[in-house]
Amino acid sequence: MKKKLLSMILATAMVASVLTGCGGNSGSSGSTAASADASDSASGTEESADTAADSAAETGDAAADTAAGGGKVGVAMPTKDLQRWNQDGSNMQAELEAAGYEVDLQYAANDIATQVSQIENMINSGCQLLVIASIDGDSLGTVLEQAKEKNIPVIAYDRLIMNSDAVSYYATFDNYMVGTKQGEYIRDQLDLDNAAGPFNIELVTGDPGDNNARYFFGGAMDVLQPYIDAGKLVVKSGQTDFETVATANWSTETAQSRMDAIISANYADGTKLDAVLCSNDSTALGVENSLEANYTGDWPIITGQDCDIANVKNMIAGKQSMSIFKDTRTLASKVVEMVDAIMKGGEAPVNDTETYDNGKGVVPSYLCEPVFADVNNYKELLVDSGYYSESDLQ
Ligand code: BGC
Image 1 (cartoon, protein in one colour):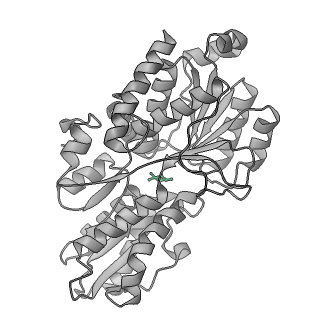
Image 2 (spheres, rainbow, N blue to C red; image 1 turned 90 degrees about the vertical axis):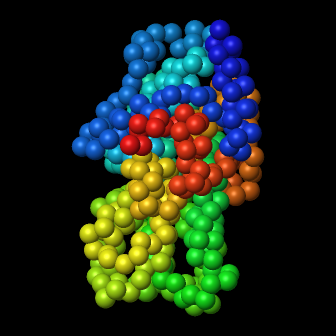
Image 3 (cartoon, rainbow, N blue to C red; image 1 turned 135 degrees about the vertical axis):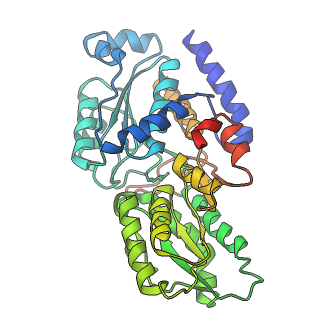
């Protein structure tokens, strides 16, 4: 029965991979429900998402689980504050359970110590494999030593875990490609190869402790830097290096107040701002809030990532130009496939064994392909695919 379910998931996954360039899409409807959860969790209260099955496993028979093809999987997510992690967590839980696994799903309120102790508990309560989306890629080395001692494989989810030799695999969307797509979008919309310019741009990226942020920013700047060097793009604030344009915790409020300062110093006199590179949607939202309050010129091109509901609404309203769509169902399906292969004693599927060196060596990775959504294709990508319903976006 479990096998049947899993092969159904994998079959759907193969169909979806044709559409998305990655490992799958279970068709889980969890994303819509999770979106509602996400807005509910704005208070920042994070709760254990343990299932009833979880406590049964603690008192029950792990050996019998394994013999039946199941087992217990710990899933550590960073925060409920961002919509996407709610979707990632609930999609993965649903798919792992459908494949016959018990799931210990935890959110850590973006607090590193909380995440470390959650992982410790997972190790000590019989989890046989860990899937971890880290808060700070550099802070899990010590706790993961314990996982290694117990031969518990670790899959780094979305964000690479740095400087640890306990990481078996990495599953993510191609982070560098996320950045290049954002840069190319700005290049194409401003027609940088033909238009006279110069155009004013500002840069906003993510948390410096998140390894992904450097890939997003690096990918975008590999496209944009030549135009900055040629004087066709001008960063009036002068803020261009990664540390300066980084946004701690990817916080909307931090991005907003930085943008407030940039506008009052550089654009309050009516100078036109043509584009803002934002590495993701939470930072884009901060920039959009700031522009709404402080900027009177023509609205700039603004990039984003995740297709969060608030940002898709802004896209429809003309306040955000694009967002990278990383279908969390796709990544969850791929990770379930990886978990299943490892739990059955095999090797997980990978498609990149070169790019992601975590300081202890290259971590074999599966990279899913991101696509961009804008006002022209969001219906097809987000609504027709069942990711959101029409009413989610109203
Ligand atoms: C993820 C993005 C997300 C950001 C903030 C990154 O690691 O790849 O999708 O927007 O974290 O949570």
